[in-house]
Each structure stands twice: as C-alpha cells, then as structure tokens.
Amino acid sequence: MLITCLAACNEDTIEPNGEGILSGQVLDADSGKPLAAVSIATTPATTAIITDAEGRFRISDITGGDYSITAKKSGYKTESVSVAVKDDKETAVIVQLSTSTEGNGAPGIPSEPSPANNTSGLSNSVTLKWKGPASKDTLTYDVYLYESGGNQKKIAESVKDTSVVADNLMHGTTYFWQVVAKNKGDATTNGPIWSFSTNALPNARYLFARSVDGNYDIYSSDGTTQNTFRLTTGFSRDWWPLLNPKRDIIAYSSDELTQPHIYTMNRDGSNKFKVTTVPIAGYHNTNGRGFAWSPDGGRLIYANYGTLYSIRRDGADLTTIATAPANRNFLSLDWTENGNKILALTIGENINHSEIYIMNADGTNQTLLVENLPGRIESPVFSIDGRSILYTRDISGFENAVGRQLDARIFRKNIDGTALVDLSANKPAGTNDLYPRYSPTGDKIIFVNVANDGMGTADIYMMDAADGKNRVKIFSNAIMPDWK
Image (cartoon, rainbow, N blue to C red; front, side):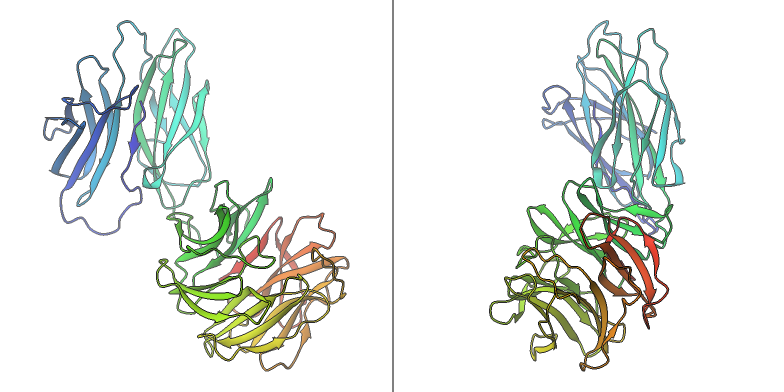
C-alpha cells in the first residue's frame, strides 16, 4: 500500500479560526480503480461513512488534530492511516487496499520510530529508525518519505537494516514517512505514518552554483560547511542564482525544458515556479545568463537574442523594453535603483566581440560605456550606489573561437567613464578572475578564480573592494556567486 499525503506540510503561524475537513479516496492496490462501499472510521471517532461510486469520502467540521483512518471492505485487508488535520484547512489522503489472501503470512507492523512521531527542530539530514516485527522469515523494508506538497519519494527499497538516512531535506518543513515490511513471499505490511519537522533555515547570505558529476545545482550558505545547503536536486542544470531585493525568493535559470528558462523558489528551495515562456537565449548563451531583478523586486529583465524583455515575477506582463545594436545580442544584465539604470553586455557572433552599454530602465538613451577591446569583456554589475561598475576583461588580448581567456581581470570604472582601476593585481599568474559582485556593504567583492587551462575547479573568493587586496577563498568547487 502506498499512502500519499496531499496536505501542505509547512506549519501555519496564523491562529486557527474554524474546524477542518478530512477527505480522501480508496483505490484497489493492484488495479488502481476506485473502491465503492468501503467503510471509513476514524480514531478519535467522528462520523462513520462509506465511500461513494468513485471511492471518495469526506468528513466535514472536525476538530484539528491527529487521526487514524481505518478502511474496511470485504475481500480486502483492513488498512489504517495516520493523518494530521488542521483547523480551517482540508486534509486529503489516498488509501490503497490490497486483496486479502488467506494464510499469506504477512509480517507484523513496524513500530517504535526514531525520531519519535511529531519530533521537531531536526536538521536537513535525519536518520530514520524503527523496530521490525518479530518474524521467522528474513524481512526487508521499503521506506517512503512524503515531501512538502504531497510529493512521494521511495528512499529505501528491500533493505534489511532498520534504519535509513533522509538527507537534502528542506528547512522549516514537516515530513511524513512510512515503513513497509516484506517477507520472502512478498507479503507486505504497511506501518503507520510518522512525522517530523526540520528547523528553520539559517541566515544563508551566499548563493552559488556547484557542479557534481557534471550536473549543476544551486546552493546557499552562511559561509560555513555545516550550513551549506543544496536547494535544487533535479536532473536539470541550474545556474545563476539571484536573491530578490526583497530577500524573499531566489531567481535562477534551468534547462529543465532543454532551453534555459527563469525559475523562482523560496530561500529553502521550496515552491519552484517557472516564470518565463520565452527562453533565455542568444549568442554564446547556453547556460541561461542574462537576467536581473528590478530594484523593487517586482520584475525581472532578461535577454532573448537581441531583445531585452521585462516580466513580472509571477510570469505575467511580458514586455519588450530594448533592442540590441545591429548584429549583436544582449548577454549579461544588471539594474540599479540609483537613476533607475540598466547595464547590459552585448556580444556578436564572435565570442570575443563584446561591449557594455548603460541605458534608462525603459530602454532609451543607450550609451556605450566600455567599448569592444582586444580580449573578452564579461559580467558587468553596478556598485551599491550605482555610481561605478565592475566587469572583467582578458588583458592578454588573446582571442580564439571558443573564447578561452588567459588573464581575465576585474576592473572598476565610474559610469561617467573615469577612474579605471585594475582590482586583480594580486591575482595568481595563470588564472582568471570572473563573475564579480559587490558585498551587501559595498566594501568587499565576491568573485570566481579559476585556472586558465580549464582543467581545475572554480573557487569563490572575496577581496577588498577598494584595492583588490586581502584575497580569501570562501567556497571550493563553486561558481556564479551572489551575496545579499
């Protein structure tokens, strides 16, 4: 039997103001068809009812709390499910009944969960333990974890041990888990559903992408190893995390649908949402670069070839705001509140032909700020006050078809074109400094340093914003940093 908990798992902080609703559907475990006339009872007792022709039942106006639902039907094994009903909310379950077989020798019920049922304040990696039933057979176990939003994941299959580790959990979330015992004859017994809650997410101010076995995911961290958390876990490649100026959601790009699109998620990695319908695309833009938050956090700007779009964070109101110069595409973008200006890197078919423009937020008054120079120019961003910019340039002047850089350095320049400063004078030879961003206080710069032969891993460093001194590595095997 599989039991899918469809109830939202996060705890509400709003005081309850009404009774809850318990609803569900009973299905045949083998055929998946609805089962009518199944007797439904609860402990504590509420209303005894039977399922309708679609196998559905609904019990209204019951007090919030923990309930055990028992489903009985002739010819099927009786099953019980534990659920948590919340005041003023509807809790839904699906129960699957297995056909009763005389003398099937099904094992007993797993018991004594650890952590104990309803334990709270756990980390994002939890060892789940239980006591197996007494049996002459050698038993194995399947373990199911029910994630926020009702997503089910089998985290162990046919294991003999009575413990398993559930890791990469979301913070501030309630989880449900269930152990299914199996004997040699494949007779099964479903244990109760137990729950636990993880603690709140620490104040993780850094965001970055990290490649593990060639797959990129988004991570957050407070700067310590123990408080570094992976926020995306799919098979897609996820890049370029940017925290909203309101600091409530993270935007990032993902190739889940082959072409990169902009997605958002909560700071703990929950509630992932696809924002764009027109993808991020253009010359030399295979990993979804080229988007930025508006200063008020209500919109995003992003590039699709030579068109600069603006879109609301909920995916509505896609608007064209600018067109790149002839034979060029937009690539990297930033947006400052000071003067309401947009910074845009444009690039041609040749990856080395890049230049930086500054413009009004409505796309008007496009002004060349950094001209096309020998060697690649990349990653322009505004300072905190919007009066200067950072960008990188390969000063070796080396240009080849794939855009390899030999000596990329971070430069600061005023938006009026004055006071150009090389901040990478202390950079190790044979390396490139890339993807700079200011710290929230403006006195530090976070950036990536990587060997110029493309063989080593990229690492994230911090240095003084004034002169580029005091370079300190803060993350290994990390790229595309953000710091809010």
